[in-house]
Image 1 (cartoon, rainbow, N blue to C red):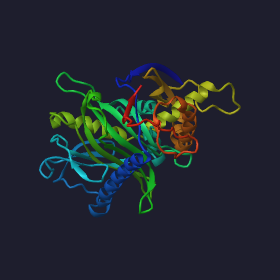
Image 2 (image 1 turned 180 degrees about the vertical axis):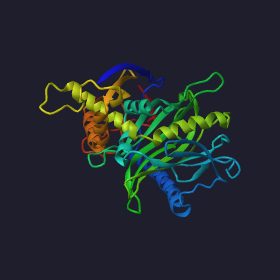
Image 3 (image 1 turned 90 degrees about the vertical axis):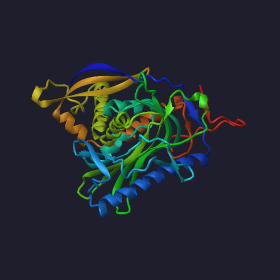
Length: 386
């Protein structure tokens, strides 16, 4: 294996803030995310069993394809003037933004469900930045404000939290958009007995001082469903919308949305890179072994090698990328290795770093991670900046 290094700047302009939630507030946010999954699952069932996996071309326009996925934009005719979004009380609220068409992605994924969820999973600021370097999405300045549900050994892909991020960079005449959302991910079983992975990003309005807002606040409600079929294949169904707010033409906003949702749609390749990261690390740390190391340090001909950029670490909010030449045997090992085992290993590794994590832990969902108590401050502010 050979490698060269490069860096990707992910420096954040945000002050690192913490969000204080009561148990009731946290549970309400988790329930809201769960309801978005149920709403999307109802659309998915209709797509499968009523529409027979045929998208209505009168309501949806085919606007792009990637591998086995098709991206659709809701046509302007039947679309309501404004989209609506579910609030914490379960009611639908109108979002006053015209340039917010719904997007839908359907198709088939190449990896296993575990690979998709491992590549998708991110429960720290650094892991989100790492994932962005894999999938090249439009997310910048990502910061988790609060934990709500955390992974366990039995459920290593479960996480729910509140986060803030910016979407893209400022342009001369268009201000950068930011978003505050509850993000939820995990695996469950459908009423048909199928294993289902889900990922939700749903905007929430919190008691944040207006003076803290440096960007235009966008709103979004997006849900990705990854369903394992009886033949072992994984089907993707994604539906949602993103409203940039303000005055932004649809032709400028929609391509940014498509880039972001496609990045999260296909994450098995990110899982392979994450596994390779650990395999390379094991090889570097190994003194001597009686069995071959996970990564073969041998010369490889050009026809038997794969060149990949693998993020290896984040130093001062910069992702260090290694351009590695890997043999096809190592790639095969990475693809067939258990994603669950690697996810559990990451969880154990992060446990030792959690003492330096500034986020507030809300619910005690892990035996290994203890919740941090909310300070008893009268009339506490929702946000605290350090």
